[in-house]
Length: 575
Image (cartoon, rainbow, N blue to C red; front, side):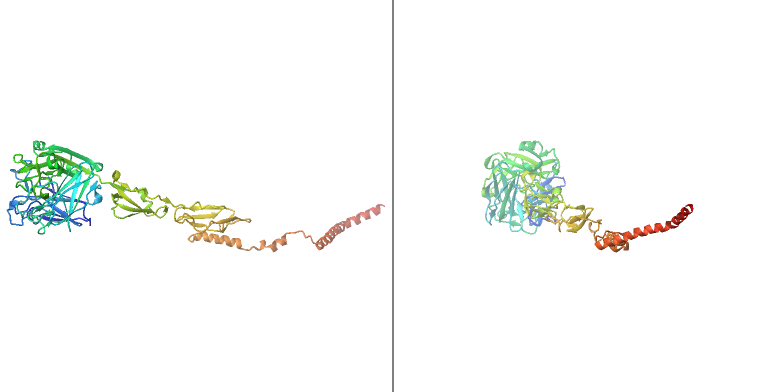
């Protein structure tokens, strides 16, 4: 972006589709130093003085960023993207330029789940047209907040408060500036709005800034948030300095850390006396005013150094200029103060965002639906996420559709344990006189059963399916013993696709059912003599038996008769 050019206003689109909870915009110079942006302009081109700074606002879809530009045909040297003041009024590093016409801007935005939950949140403060904010809010931290965000929302955009301003009072009734200043101590937050003239409001970038015409807002709602980040920091560095120490270091503070690796770098001051004693205020990123009274602490940083600009010591009289200033145009003179009795606090930190996770072995058992949360590839959920868990198919529980909420405690804990999911298992399908060929006892699993050797299938199911209530389909098979040679036919179920096995069974049945002539009853009776107890059968048997015996005797006699006759004849001759 460049001051007073066609790039004095840029619009960056984000994809949140909701208002970010926090937006950070920075301007990086060619020297490599990074300067924070403002939530509102405190200068316009009617003063005919050089001024600079980056101003931004945002909504549900866009972030608009502006730098100074001509609206009233002023001097060419009047506008700057970043300005750290004239050497005659502001003290700072000698070797750094004071005016940067061109810069590179970077915007970062966070959703509510991207940050740790705030330790305290104020009620909304409504500001109507003509109201002036001079408000004290009591927070609940009992210590200095590590971080404060003040948001102001009007009908179509949001802008943020800032700690300090280099403007103490309006130069004319047409001096356009605005914004909300804030500071905090261990118990309270104080808010100031720009008041007193017609050109002042909650937000202003109406004259002398890039953008679509006059941008200002005189009404809206203010919300403040405070954090205690002690439990949410992965790394942290802080350094306290007096004004004398900063001047002794040539306004360049070397930090033994790589500042660009931290998520947040901040320089603030703490007031050590007067009406705002112990209150801390964030520094700012550019000089917008050098007309008395003026003041403030401007800072920028690179990877290893923090650069600081404050009013010159020879003019810091507490009337013309001071390091800390709340001028008459803020809050109708509420807690007005100018002082140099302050300490400077440099803080850098990495913030760990609490998240709730789900282990991979648990995921296998659950159906998880997200109500209002983002699920990362690692199954991490942001604080405030609400999910509903139920057991997947194949598991059962006494609880269904259990809601869990991610809480911030211990850097992320669920509000309750997930429901207990028990895998559905059917019992062992083995019954008497059977064998289990194969079985899967999980939901939808199949048990393949056969009758034991020597037993035949009578009834029941040989193929059974495990149901979601943990029971088998059908009824248990019944197998009874075989009293004749027992084939395996019917004892083992056949699947429809097992055609070869089916053919073998059919052949076996044919063999079993075929009739052999030699094995009929009639044929067997012809070959077997059996006892007949009837009387007639006994008489017939006796006659036939006697006859057979007589016949056998006669046959023997007849066969020996010639020999007998011969013997008789021989005996006669001898006699």
